[in-house]
Length: 450
Image (tube, rainbow, N blue to C red; front, top):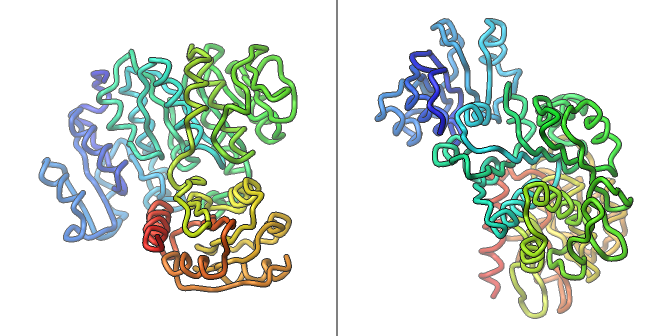
């Protein structure tokens, strides 16, 4: 970690805790900053805040007092989930106090270069594939970001010999000022998180921030099959590396005659890839591009693609019960992800779907319901999903209270040879803290069936 004096004896407010807030507060305290942490959860119910208090960090819990911003703070490090219309953020910006997310802080002290991955879908799978390819190629990668390890923790152990492979959300990218990945990736861009961003233009601008500080010495890997993505690429100063599942691109990654090529070089045959789902081809092209730019040999790439079966909660195969195959795709928090999941199967599917109601309808799913023989719904969107299921001609529709009850209900309406798929098309927050919790409950319920 770089020894920097930027924050020494500076007053800094860390707004919102969770993993990123705790890490940012601890790191700033270590660098000699005067840190104040403000979190909505009461101190008595907040072990993270209690731990920071024991370090000698000032902690204010239970609400977000706007008058706190009159205390002369020079920087606000906010939790990515706190929207910019939050009164504390609005007031900070009115007072000219810079507002960042902890990714910016991590970048400033990191000795290691970054490979940054963003996009609407496929981020975690792509991030994991790149990490595995770099590991197989002896490139000493470290993994960080939304995938579970906070960047501010990872950078403290990183050296110039490492590469940090980081998954980045639009929420995190809105809070960067100088963050500059050596290699940036934009997997795809679809309508999402409009309850946070307001408009598709704002969402796209947040994603585009991943390349805003790149120079001609950097690389920007982009989806050439998407016009919106290529528009963003036009504004980048980095070397553009396109990928496509439909076109031959001599300057990028593409598929031709059952082979994946990178800049005209044969890398791997598609028959040797074990990761299911046509949509994963985009993720694989992304990952291969980043790996090749990082100097990874084809043999290491083959080794990963020949063994990598996917990431937990992303079309994760759980097992078979009486001839029924169970798959956990809890990370499918939007319609597109569920469409991709359904397209991965030729067998009859019993679909488990539902969750947080963000105000949208689900008619886009109707063409993808061709192979769905039954649907089990739950959560706030159950009624909406049931309507489109009826419109699609699905006869067997069962509503249950939650995912745990959905599993035996799905078993009951399925037969040997069917796929039982949890792919909710919705966020989990109406019933579960995270999609991981939702997926773990599904896995446990399947094991109970066994």
